[in-house]
Image (cartoon, rainbow, N blue to C red; front, side, top):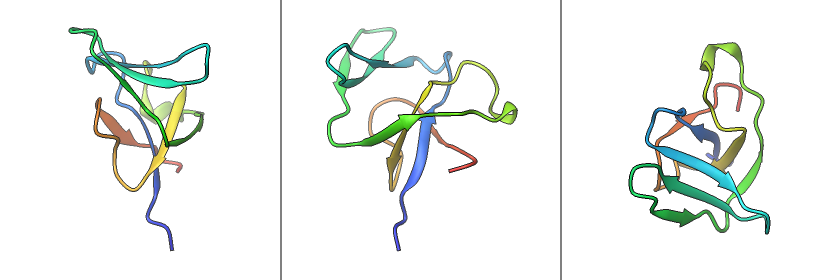
Length: 79
């Protein structure tokens, strides 16, 4: 049985942003240093956020056994 969960970026004030580039790549960007990390190999989909998660969340969620290594991630409560 898979232990994978859905993860979303912690919010707009976490110091990181998740961007989808025109070529389809997902990239985590450190908003203070502009350092970028491509998210190759992750399964992702557009997220629907319950009100309990608050505003400022990324519209993309990542599927993984644990949070991705770059950025600040929280488990999606419905995933």
